[in-house]
Length: 390
Figure 1 (cartoon, helix red, strand yellow):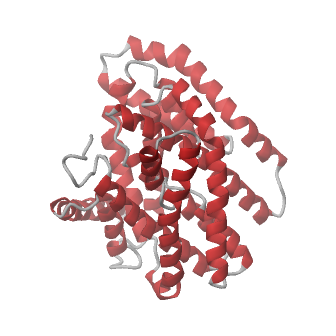
Figure 2 (tube, rainbow, N blue to C red; figure 1 turned 45 degrees about the vertical axis):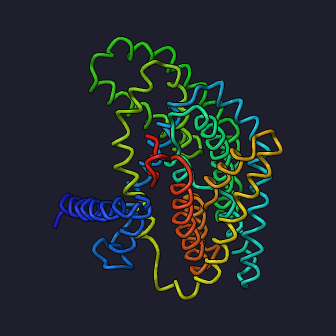
Figure 3 (cartoon, rainbow, N blue to C red; figure 1 turned 135 degrees about the horizontal axis):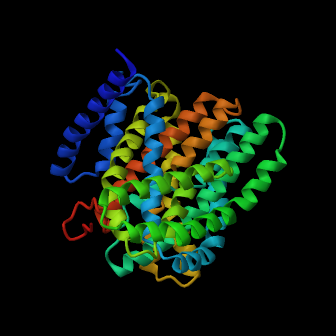
């Protein structure tokens, strides 16, 4: 079987299986994201082994995160975003320190090595950008404000996660690259400058000149998103941050909402693959070893993250109901948690048990957090017609 046939077969399994499980999920009022993860666990290398190599799936799924951040950027006016970032910077920092201590203490109690405890603590610091943004409604003013605060925290966490990844890479290489550190310092201002100069003087003219050619608008917007994502990667940041800045740069253009609406199917295609990869990547042979610490850490994470965010947000003047909702929306682990333990394992900083413990906590927190948000708050996937927003 050649490579093209292999990819086609994998896509057949993923999307046929997703269609079946999603149908069951909708009839039973369950979260679609949970169905995607469950399918990955069932069909993946540690389940029925129908998809034996998840490397291509992992790489393809990352594209979904890029498009997700690009589309969210298209909905944010720059002045509103910068105001929210200033307001949320110290909240992101304090919460990250507290969640690091949570992960470190729990893993230390269960006799993980100190080096592993540091990695588990770092993995616990972050909330999921995908879960947080995928479940945000965009139509009601109150929820637009909630969305701005959620996005601000997640963006600041993403920047901190990049710093953690650079530190891990430096430890693995046994040297600190001054060039890489300088790139990180200047990367965000450079990206912002390039994005706004290019968008203002070139993209806006092209969009206005050829706005009747819908296929061209579609291609141009994807090219712009991926170009900024690649530039961000070259500068030492994540591709997701570059895609987000690309979206914000176009947010003030009248055609931005049209672009966002037309790119949603592309985003959803890749996000299905991402969540499938999350489920497929877990090795069930380690489950008996990691299940107890994973259950305890995931339970504490799901309980304490909403409490901490509610307290911090209320301190800066947000009403209690909004603060609590944001805390619940940010109450899980992150896809960056998976990336951190993967890099640490590849560089021999942690044991395999630590890797799968963090994977188990991340998956458990994804599933429970999805249910919590979908059951009680407005989302595109809400189980109640009253809560559903599109």
